[in-house]
Length: 299
Image 1 (tube, rainbow, N blue to C red):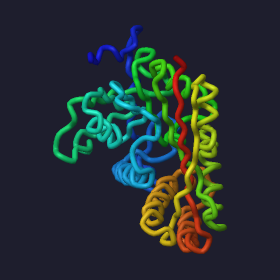
Image 2 (image 1 turned 45 degrees about the vertical axis):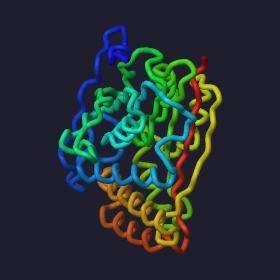
Image 3 (image 1 turned 90 degrees about the vertical axis):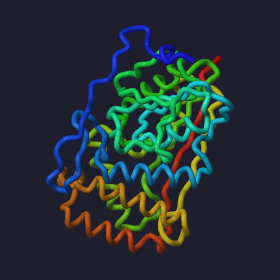
């Protein structure tokens, strides 16, 4: 199958490159310039994203929930480090797999467990907020995961319609999102409140995860299925709990500078709350929700 099938017939432009800015003076973490993304964009975040991928693959028992068979073309929107797309390219060797993201991954950090990049994989720089540089109906399966901190609240309907647009009639669209920790205790609740306030000031609403099925319906998708799971966070949850604890506290450290820069808490107050939240995990049996929704573009 020719790669040219994927491009938009008009213009075919690619998004303007977005680069991480200088390290934040409050936490020495780099963040994207001219983008609403709340989390950092640096090596620590790359490592966390890879870790999170393996955690989700383990807990969800695979890389996808939609009832796809043998898709010939797969798009991963917000592909990050490329782990998911690489694995899908190997799982479906007869498929063309494209990863699209606002920032091109570092070639030295691109995943290749056996030392080679799959021949059926390509990366295209693109920004879902500007419209994807692909033709209508280009993909059999379109996937977007964990962009809750990157998409302004008002743009979710537009973004979901764009996912449907680039999917062929009868093809599947799948979205996976998360939300704030539940039952974390007073300290965790305070941190969640700080992060929510800091995100809302950037136009991003971290509470929208449960609505992804609704967004798919609103974008015209049919046969929509939605469900959620809650992962234990902490030693009480065994292996999964320890994995989720590592992921959650990686996120908490990643947004510390943003919270402090908005004067919602001092760095010392934030650190103290994080320590108290970690100590409370098992007492309150903290849980981390994930939301999965998929549907088809009408035929």
